[in-house]
Length: 155
Image (cartoon, rainbow, N blue to C red):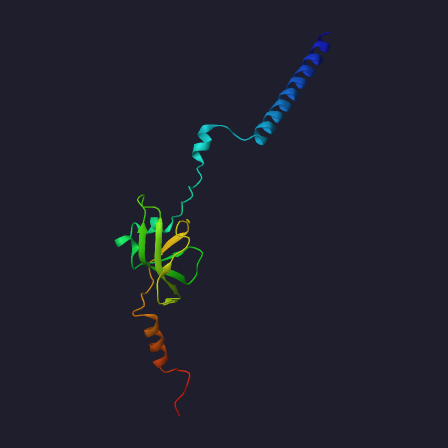
Protein backbone atom coordinates (compact mmCIF):
# COMPACT_ATOMS: atom_id res chain seq x y z
CA UNK A 1 0.00 0.00 0.00
CA UNK A 2 2.86 2.37 0.71
CA UNK A 3 4.22 1.53 -2.69
CA UNK A 4 0.92 2.55 -4.32
CA UNK A 5 0.92 5.87 -2.47
CA UNK A 6 4.48 6.60 -3.62
CA UNK A 7 3.60 5.77 -7.26
CA UNK A 8 0.45 7.92 -7.05
CA UNK A 9 2.42 10.88 -5.58
CA UNK A 10 5.00 10.55 -8.36
CA UNK A 11 2.35 10.67 -11.08
CA UNK A 12 0.71 13.68 -9.43
CA UNK A 13 4.08 15.48 -9.38
CA UNK A 14 4.70 14.66 -13.06
CA UNK A 15 1.20 15.82 -13.97
CA UNK A 16 1.64 19.07 -12.03
CA UNK A 17 5.04 19.69 -13.65
CA UNK A 18 3.62 19.01 -17.11
CA UNK A 19 0.69 21.32 -16.37
CA UNK A 20 3.08 24.14 -15.24
CA UNK A 21 5.22 23.74 -18.35
CA UNK A 22 2.21 23.91 -20.65
CA UNK A 23 0.87 27.01 -18.85
CA UNK A 24 4.22 28.79 -19.11
CA UNK A 25 4.37 27.89 -22.80
CA UNK A 26 0.89 29.33 -23.40
CA UNK A 27 1.74 32.46 -21.39
CA UNK A 28 4.89 33.07 -23.46
CA UNK A 29 3.03 32.39 -26.68
CA UNK A 30 0.24 34.82 -25.85
CA UNK A 31 2.58 37.66 -24.81
CA UNK A 32 4.72 37.22 -27.92
CA UNK A 33 1.81 37.64 -30.32
CA UNK A 34 0.02 40.55 -28.64
CA UNK A 35 1.56 44.05 -28.65
CA UNK A 36 2.71 45.44 -25.36
CA UNK A 37 0.59 48.12 -23.81
CA UNK A 38 3.06 49.05 -21.14
CA UNK A 39 3.39 52.86 -21.20
CA UNK A 40 6.91 52.74 -19.81
CA UNK A 41 8.10 50.71 -22.81
CA UNK A 42 6.36 53.00 -25.29
CA UNK A 43 8.07 56.08 -23.91
CA UNK A 44 11.51 54.52 -24.24
CA UNK A 45 11.05 53.92 -27.98
CA UNK A 46 10.40 57.33 -29.56
CA UNK A 47 9.87 57.83 -33.25
CA UNK A 48 11.69 60.81 -34.76
CA UNK A 49 9.36 63.70 -35.45
CA UNK A 50 8.92 64.50 -39.12
CA UNK A 51 10.10 68.00 -39.96
CA UNK A 52 7.28 70.08 -41.43
CA UNK A 53 8.26 71.59 -44.77
CA UNK A 54 7.71 75.31 -45.37
CA UNK A 55 6.01 77.38 -48.00
CA UNK A 56 7.84 80.24 -49.73
CA UNK A 57 6.77 82.89 -47.21
CA UNK A 58 7.80 80.82 -44.19
CA UNK A 59 11.26 80.43 -45.75
CA UNK A 60 11.50 84.11 -46.74
CA UNK A 61 10.50 85.53 -43.36
CA UNK A 62 13.91 84.73 -41.85
CA UNK A 63 15.86 86.29 -44.72
CA UNK A 64 16.70 90.01 -44.78
CA UNK A 65 14.02 92.16 -46.42
CA UNK A 66 11.69 89.14 -46.73
CA UNK A 67 14.00 87.42 -49.23
CA UNK A 68 14.05 90.09 -51.92
CA UNK A 69 17.07 89.42 -54.13
CA UNK A 70 17.58 85.88 -52.78
CA UNK A 71 17.19 82.63 -54.70
CA UNK A 72 14.57 80.06 -53.75
CA UNK A 73 13.46 76.84 -55.34
CA UNK A 74 11.16 73.91 -54.76
CA UNK A 75 12.90 70.93 -53.19
CA UNK A 76 12.31 68.64 -56.17
CA UNK A 77 13.66 71.11 -58.76
CA UNK A 78 17.21 70.63 -60.03
CA UNK A 79 19.04 73.56 -61.55
CA UNK A 80 16.00 75.87 -61.53
CA UNK A 81 15.34 78.67 -59.06
CA UNK A 82 13.66 82.05 -58.69
CA UNK A 83 15.29 85.30 -57.61
CA UNK A 84 12.56 87.01 -55.59
CA UNK A 85 11.84 90.53 -56.88
CA UNK A 86 8.49 91.37 -55.25
CA UNK A 87 6.36 89.97 -52.44
CA UNK A 88 2.76 90.93 -51.72
CA UNK A 89 2.23 89.59 -48.20
CA UNK A 90 -1.15 89.09 -46.54
CA UNK A 91 -1.73 90.10 -42.91
CA UNK A 92 -1.01 86.70 -41.36
CA UNK A 93 2.51 86.59 -42.83
CA UNK A 94 2.16 83.06 -44.21
CA UNK A 95 0.25 83.75 -47.40
CA UNK A 96 0.48 86.11 -50.32
CA UNK A 97 1.81 86.46 -53.85
CA UNK A 98 5.37 86.55 -55.11
CA UNK A 99 7.15 87.52 -58.32
CA UNK A 100 10.65 86.69 -59.44
CA UNK A 101 13.16 86.10 -62.19
CA UNK A 102 13.47 82.48 -63.25
CA UNK A 103 17.01 81.04 -63.41
CA UNK A 104 18.24 77.80 -64.95
CA UNK A 105 21.77 76.65 -64.12
CA UNK A 106 22.64 80.12 -62.81
CA UNK A 107 21.55 82.01 -65.94
CA UNK A 108 18.29 83.97 -66.20
CA UNK A 109 15.63 82.41 -68.40
CA UNK A 110 13.63 85.60 -69.04
CA UNK A 111 14.24 89.34 -68.77
CA UNK A 112 11.08 90.30 -66.90
CA UNK A 113 9.89 88.95 -63.57
CA UNK A 114 6.86 86.67 -63.58
CA UNK A 115 4.39 85.59 -60.93
CA UNK A 116 5.62 82.51 -59.07
CA UNK A 117 3.10 79.69 -58.92
CA UNK A 118 2.80 77.26 -56.03
CA UNK A 119 4.07 79.64 -53.33
CA UNK A 120 1.69 78.15 -50.73
CA UNK A 121 2.83 74.56 -51.28
CA UNK A 122 5.09 73.19 -48.57
CA UNK A 123 8.18 72.36 -50.58
CA UNK A 124 10.35 75.51 -50.72
CA UNK A 125 14.01 75.92 -49.83
CA UNK A 126 16.54 78.73 -49.83
CA UNK A 127 19.45 78.39 -52.29
CA UNK A 128 22.44 79.74 -50.37
CA UNK A 129 25.27 79.28 -52.87
CA UNK A 130 23.59 80.71 -55.97
CA UNK A 131 25.81 83.23 -57.74
CA UNK A 132 23.95 86.30 -58.86
CA UNK A 133 24.47 87.01 -62.56
CA UNK A 134 25.37 90.65 -63.19
CA UNK A 135 23.35 92.48 -65.86
CA UNK A 136 20.36 91.57 -67.96
CA UNK A 137 19.80 88.59 -70.20
CA UNK A 138 20.76 90.53 -73.37
CA UNK A 139 24.08 91.65 -71.86
CA UNK A 140 24.92 88.07 -70.86
CA UNK A 141 24.13 86.76 -74.36
CA UNK A 142 26.25 89.48 -75.98
CA UNK A 143 29.13 88.66 -73.66
CA UNK A 144 28.90 84.96 -74.57
CA UNK A 145 28.86 85.75 -78.31
CA UNK A 146 31.82 88.12 -78.12
CA UNK A 147 34.09 85.69 -76.27
CA UNK A 148 36.17 83.56 -78.64
CA UNK A 149 35.41 79.87 -78.79
CA UNK A 150 38.41 77.87 -77.46
CA UNK A 151 37.58 74.92 -79.73
CA UNK A 152 38.33 76.93 -82.89
CA UNK A 153 42.06 77.12 -83.59
CA UNK A 154 43.62 80.16 -85.16
CA UNK A 155 45.59 79.37 -88.34
